[in-house]
Length: 467
Image (tube, rainbow, N blue to C red):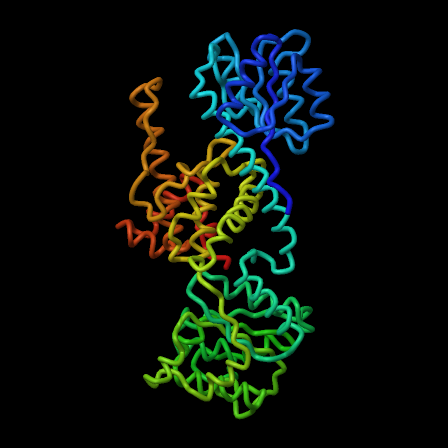
């Protein structure tokens, strides 16, 4: 059995008396392996042969000062966390050090308690930073499943089932709460199948009234109704040779359930108003967030259709049952939206992943994704922290502290701009990009709400669900 690797600290200071003093102070509190160097050159030599997690670095040194050394460190692939120290308590130096990538800044003479606490936090930051890098490497291994990521046992089981059923042509019923990623699973099954070169046609069953949904699914013949000027193909014909995905099948009206059953049994459809049936070669995937057995007991869902659909059942667990996947998902969405909104280099700061893992996500992956997207859009610095998350519901934490250096008019404009952007973004996220519902919720006419979105450069489509 191997022992746990020790945390490693390197102290760099050109004052010979400081090194043993600092080493004794830190060793008395922390069981770390500690190295010392009298110059940046000596420190670089140590780094060539040793892995170091945190560096306590003096700014004022001959030949190469601490700021120059810090710049060299940040060019390394896996750079240590750096805490700067100086006898010159000048705020400009602190700002410059932080800007160049230092974790924190201490002023001599050092306070022992603050020194230990700062180094502990720097060591924890180093662990989290490299843990996030490991998560990114894990994400790249999951590309086969598009936007689905997960290292939990539950999700690994889902991925294995996808691999198995994708190679067959059986009907699959995908179950799970809203926002768990049922459409992504269906698309992954299609992409892994022999039908992947043909169309994948998703159908949102509750989105259309019954009479419109019927014509959308099965098409219609010329003259079937007043406006039927010519034959129109339905979505089953569009999916010929490929896959049709019936999303939220539990909301399908009984009359359409009967017609769908015929498609599954006979492999043929009958367009509205047509005397002829047409053969179709389509794989059917379906999903639901409803309890279909309960709906069957209530006479709201056909039992024979259920068993036709439920050849293979694939259940997606809610996010609360796989909290270990939350940091992985958050890192994935952070990378995705940082690239989309041209904020490359945006990183998760200390405490962010822990806070996300503690939060409740009743809307599951979709809600987490929208929260990360909103936070990326509103971010102003290179690092996102837990405090940047704000309120998921959009009903608090809307106003930033005013800047007392601004005039009243400028400060008021800054606060109002921030309020409007964050309020509108939160509202759209809450209503999944539905402008009509968002406008109604906040008491504005739809046109006025759209004018506000244009004024602040907010696009409703950015908040529509992708899972």
